[in-house]
Each structure stands twice: as C-alpha cells, then as structure tokens.
Length: 86
Image (cartoon, rainbow, N blue to C red; front, side, top):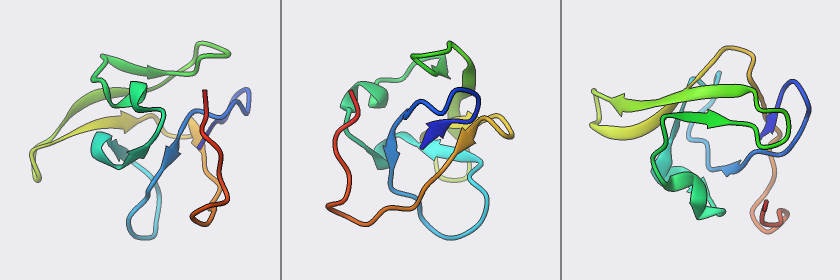
C-alpha cells in the first residue's frame, strides 16, 4: 500500500475480501512491525500526510486504523513477491 499523494510505500497489508479498503486491522499488517504499535494516526513518512486514525472496530473489538477516503493506493501482490518496507 502506498500514499496516494506522494506514492511512497507505507506498508504491506494482508487484505481480506474484495471491495474498498476502509480500515486496516493492526494484526494483519506484514512487517515492518513498527506499524503494529498503536499510534494516534497513520502518517506517510515521506510527505507527512495523515492517512488514517487509530481506533477500535467495535463489531470485532480489534485495533484498526480507519483510513481517509483516497489516502491510500493499493497494489495486489502474491506471497513471496514483496520485500520489507523500511
């Protein structure tokens, strides 16, 4: 997943299901594990744009980042095709 504004890679995320990405569950983020530490907001390290805010998805009682519309662009990759994002 990349910042829509500057195209900087933000994370690798294991998305479940089809459709639009509205929230990111912290337990489905692939390393770097620094992103699994709960922070108030998800920010692009390159341009500083706020991509989403932290919260709890009440239906499942899971920690999430709720994404702002149009903040993230995603690319589907297969297992083994990615490298760790620093």
